[in-house]
Image 1 (cartoon, rainbow, N blue to C red):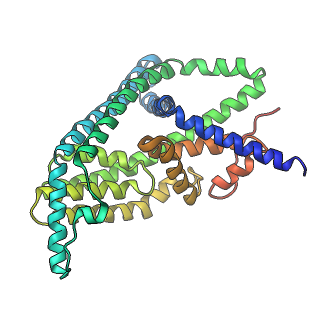
Image 2: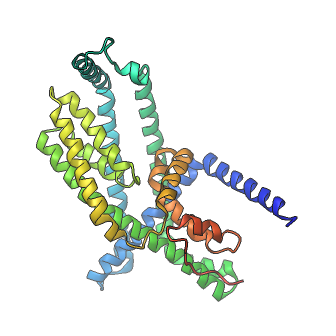
Image 3: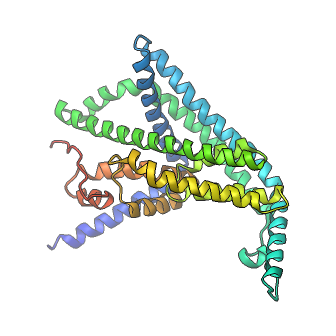
Length: 348
């Protein structure tokens, strides 16, 4: 009992130090984690191709899968960057249009003082917002280059990892246990990405159809952005439906186009989120919903927008690691949805 306060203080200090390192090293760690997730995705794509083309050389399939993943990711980021630059140009028009809508709403409600954007959210400096977005885009491309370097080395060294683990573990039993943990991590991340991708494509298709139906401009940008936002748990789809609806207010003199985009997207999100997503998810993502929200807040605070995308994979990795040690298994139990995280424990 006398060691409990000292042990508690060690845990608190260690946790604070770990969070500090995650924050200050985020420019290095974020591209690495993204590259790791993409490498896991390449592994799944390689197995998918080899099941249908068994005689294909492994190296050729790996190169094809790697190129497909990295080109798709780069094209998506390029589309986002180009669309964001166009949005910056439309910033003043959006603020003016929102002001007009609020003034009209104030008159219809017979308010003494008309509502304005500045009265609701304070003075909005379009120049500052534009500078922030452009600085984020610059950091995005810097991180993209670093991610590609990490991705290349991880992809090239995948088949040497087992030998390295065996040499580092010192015994075949311990190396087998470590490899089993790594395989479980990659399998769960693959499953998470698969479920999010399939449901995200369903949601994106419905959103794209309604945006095309009302005639919204720059649909390709909104489609890519919406699909990426579906990977942010709980709030991504809502943000993805609000933002294009707001920009529909600029393009059209009437409100029904923006309302239609938001309403239809939310209806499909409710249907897929309540009927399709739970069946696909099943027991593969054993994370408590409250923990998902807390993880989203924590990783967004530490790593910004990238952290919101990586919140669930990082929580899955942390839960599996915590489950391997007696002193931290209770943390894994608290993170899990059913309180029973069952993962193999490495011997010794």
